[in-house]
Length: 366
Image 1 (cartoon, helix red, strand yellow):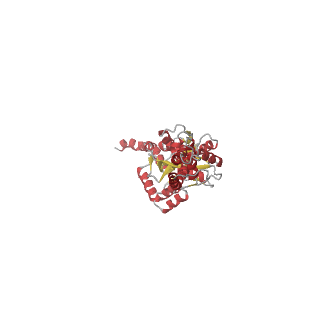
Image 2 (spheres, helix red, strand yellow; image 1 turned 180 degrees about the horizontal axis):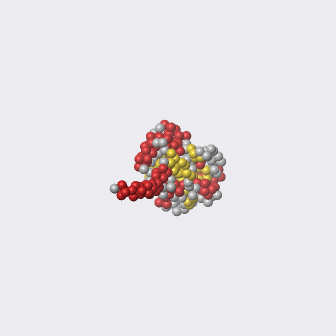
Image 3 (cartoon, rainbow, N blue to C red; image 1 turned 120 degrees about the horizontal axis):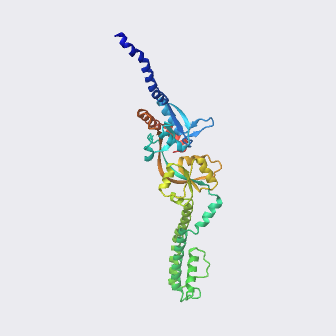
């Protein structure tokens, strides 16, 4: 009996070695997950790099608090923006530190935390020079709104000019000719009376003419103020529209945006046929400086950060908001559900703190 059990005892070490050989990759994988790979791309003001090469910003503050709450070991990995999504999808990174916009398409390949900030897209363009502003003002005088206001004013003056001519043409034909020429003289009198210039070259003599004059004098005070406001409004509205008051004003312009961004997708879906895509914000700004594009379409917080750091005041952030976006941390689908839930809970806990609200305000996000 002992002789028969000897082979089993001899074979035991071999079985253990084989088992350890099979299990070791799994153990190595598990140990590698102890340190999370946190990918980032500089995205001011959420992720910025300080002079000591340390990262700062609301997203950094939030993630580091989450890591401390859950005793998470992590390391930062710098990546281009487009590689953040592919890195999460292919399990090359575990978390995206840079804010990602939640979309249905992205949710098919990666996970998201709950959103921690709501932002809109906006438009950045070169600052309008005083000469350009002056030219825009001059062009306003040829706008449709201005011409309509001017035409309406001329029509009212003509009506009262004809009325005064009707009463004066027979008994005061020296000043108001009985022919068609008298209509022009009535128009002249009406304009002079409305503007209170009072040349005195033409004045009504008939009772009917003087009654029309009294009515026109008092009416003109109201009408001239109304038409002045209308003309001023038409000039102002046209000046605002020349500065592009809505996103559709840019459909016929060459607009640059980031490749594979949510704004790029939105512009494609809304038929912005002249858009150009660039890999980085630096490339976008260079293209804008060289007038290869007329404006930049991107997330408003990022554009606001550019304007805040613009010491030369080269850029204007247009007061246009469109395409609301929900920012969140992107997570690899390979993360354990328990860890994803812990990260999400801790994130919600931290954004309820007053420190988070103060940080957003200091970063110009509220």
